[in-house]
Image 1 (cartoon, helix red, strand yellow):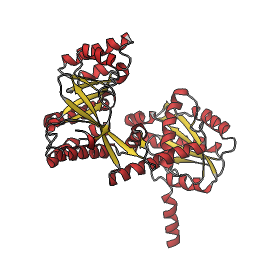
Image 2 (cartoon, rainbow, N blue to C red):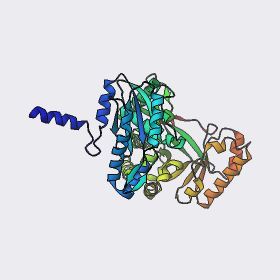
Image 3 (cartoon, helix red, strand yellow):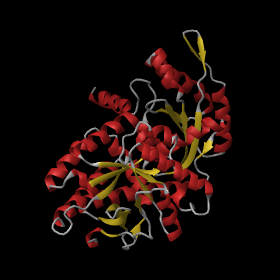
Image 4 (cartoon, one colour):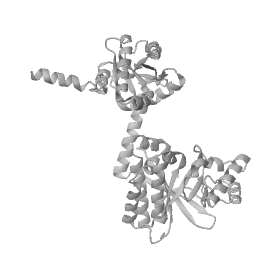
Length: 420
């Protein structure tokens, strides 16, 4: 009797209790048991709206019926697996997999789901790739397939994730995992280091922008563009932001005697801007290191942070109430920047360098920068020009009433510990 009970428990461990389809644990086991497999991802985003209107049972029954519709086209060792949300996954053999995926896609497009007498046919995105056992980082791979299946909804055809090749795909995933581990180690053991670039004001004042850097095993500097997206993907962005803030404040406290009133600008990720607890964490650090709030400028990229406008405004508003300043970074490149700016109460506007770089030779860039300066003055905001890299550029931006200049002509980044 005990063997029967334990055997049943093992079977149930591989079955979704609601949809009654094999779960991801079962998929993982099947992938390990086959030398090569084709993973086919079915994405049905329309189920979310239908579920809201008709209830969760619609989503459950849709998945069950679609699974039954697909099963006759599968071999005996192939199966449909349950994914949470609006998705299903198939494990197929690799023989003639492209033709089979195309046939499956055609077959799925003929599927009609009847609910309460109403025929429903939400579009199904299809993506696929071939993998070799053992499949490491399955959940990351399914995330890649989910993204690719969104494209399938646009192209109305199955999307092959593997145009770059299976091994390349797995190497890419392993590379991101390795970078995630490197970032976690850097947080735990202070392997990051900070640089600072001066920003000079036309009235003689100066402050510095803090730049985060990381070295690889050979001592070479890793470009932030290579590690910040990974930090965002794995939920490390806010922890890194707090590391930067704390280490900047520690430097400010240590150098208080010879730099008593110096200001620093720190970039914030969208994750931090959208965290309700973030202002309290900043306030605690300011108190701990006895730094005045007005000595900090927080830079946010408007195209990212302002998409979640409500929480972003609350977070930025609280930071301003403490006495910190808010700068909108890379202004002019985000979607509907001018429209969004109407609702933002920031102190500083940093014009994206793509407009400054060619301002001398490109009349359109000149007019764009002039209009941004005019808009900023109406909002009582100070303006920073990035990428000031020649005397000609400096002369032009000063004629437009720019308040602050930043770029290699003004000053190159240097180690934070070396600035005076």
